[in-house]
Length: 254
Image (tube, rainbow, N blue to C red):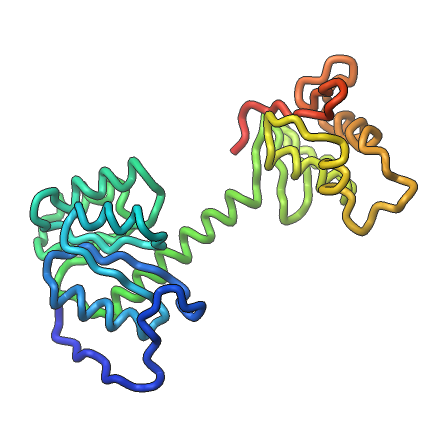
């Protein structure tokens, strides 16, 4: 890596306490080169990224078990398990973003790393500022992807757009929902295959827009069943559990 001078101590430098609310991102640096770890930890702090450093796979696993991290910066050449093996293990255990580093310029390493699930790849030497930019890009992309997944929930041929509050059937037709119907469906989707009492559902679905006279969760469930095409005599999606409440029995939620 280019010899980037370490920042001088000044009042603008963030504290090293990773629990400080000013930290926006937590990064784990896995590299057996101690000077590089120390330089990156110091440099990333200038961009509100709290970084911890470890030298090998054992240290990585221990750190991941002890703390939450938003991104792992993983060197390819490590003692013991190499970066590719650790990338494979990480991806089997978690969807945490991975940025791989290598001093080798073999294109096959890059291809294998990306195929194993790394989100990005940088060759040494590199500018620390580029590493920051890559981390920010990865995290922005991950957040956008997760927001998109969260915005569009699919279940048993239906799609619920939580941003537009639209229920969309398999052929693309939009089925309008009232605010209360949307909230009720959202509660069901968040707690599938669990028996929910009428009181639980009413508290979650009521909001400020439902007037006092419209306190019947049974009526709300009936209206929602109708819009979902769920036969009230033999419902498949919203099932009645006698004496207890209702259960949302969708089998394909994602």
